[in-house]
Length: 185
Image (cartoon, rainbow, N blue to C red; front, side, top):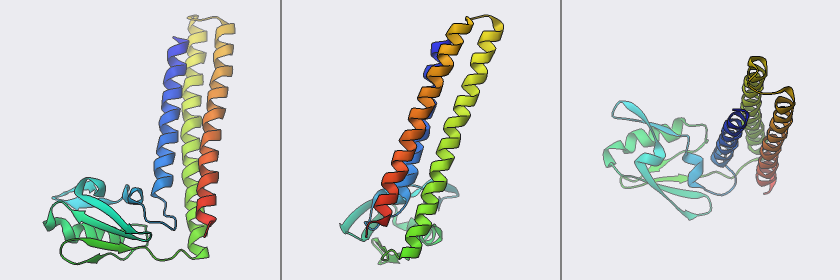
């Protein structure tokens, strides 16, 4: 019972770290990267659909992305979603593909992206801590019900703290790498 709670907690913490990785990939650096469009949602036949499901991406140059919608009738909606996204891009449409040329990052914009990255890292850490709190409550309930001895619960709590620390450190490492990537010109 204790082992199940710890395994479930570790699994949820792993997912929080994965979400942080995805969020960091969506933050733009100097190079064009299709992952930065992962969070862009397009109004497609009345429902919000991720852009990744509606188009293919090519990066012919370091700062250019060509987006080819599978359904040409969705071109205007894709272009509108890109323009309204927080990526700060101005897409151009030639009727076949949407060309997105990423502007050179200014020092001010880099600082803004670092702030966004720190916010996303803190959100991931809060998620990890919430998992720890819920698991701790479950361990306390197990101890109170008498399903396990106090020594076992104390050992499990130490293990839970170690797992939490490891995941928070992983998020900090991801943030550090992203900050270096953003500050490198």
